[in-house]
Length: 449
Ligand SMILES: [Ca+2]
Ligand SMILES: [Ca+2]
Image (cartoon, protein in one colour):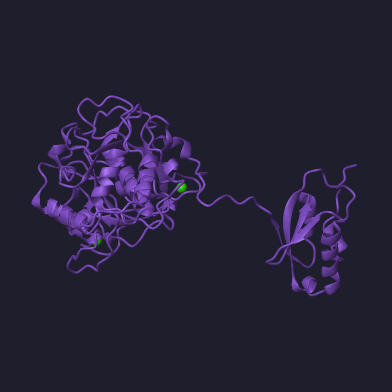
């Protein structure tokens, strides 16, 4: 007979009516917290019996009284069930194991090779020993966002900067709702012959930056304790330079007529591009943002050309990001050359997708349907990893300046794991080494400007 089999049920000892039969328990017991109603807790004799159990350790199944009320017992499942059915018992709760908030239990973590692969990952978990981005804010200027469990508590109020109601598909021009209405096209739209489903591009990019840690099912962002300001600038057939420039000014704390201002974000992510030289419009907006202390990160572009030929990657002061394939070589689609500052994983753009970048999207072909996860590839997926790292850097040292951020990204980049003969900047970003260096240097006196 097991040592548990003959012990009386707690409820019986307490003199409570038990509606379930007491069955000899098997060896398996678990810890349960039992909450009694006032008829029990107000009954001094009954509670004394509970206390006596605790003090004398006999019978042994009563562990202790909890500070907030409730009694901790060690019971079999059958005993717990009987206890729950007893008169005077209001709740029987399992004494569950509690995980460290933000620990990496997200089930898709294994597939996020870009975060942790020893060869081609950005070493985000190493940086997380110091910070997960607490206090930092990233503006994602993109197609907007869709509701997703990965964004619960992760977003700050954003804005819809799309002036063209047809492109925005929300029936109006600028407004305070940055929700993505879908950028699907029909055959013949936007000079494309075939038409295409909605990309939910901004939702994917936002997930890479700031997807919640520790929820299921899902992924983790590079800076899961930072916040994202979603700014909608891209709609059906793309976006307007004028809207993007205004959004850069707004996100960096500048004044935009008719729109309530906000404090400067730490970094703006621009996973978008327009061919040609850096325009005066884009160049001015970016220079102003940097002058207000906001870093600007841009995708180098997916045209397989020199990054110096696309904007805003080629604008002065921009951190321009090339994409690496799963093997650590430059991705075949990535722009390259002198216009690239650093590289980050962008995916191989293979048939299976598993060598691409997994993040959050909506499942709708046209309008929104339900939150899901998908693999995308591109410099659009590489840039937000850098923006996320900048958030970690600003969290580690809120006083770090925009030029110092660029210098640290460059100085602490790793040599490329694979070939990039045409130029991938300083190499693969290393979140661990970069955040370590930022913390080390933050104690040194800064040059006065
Ligand atoms: Ca609108
Ligand atoms: Ca998650």
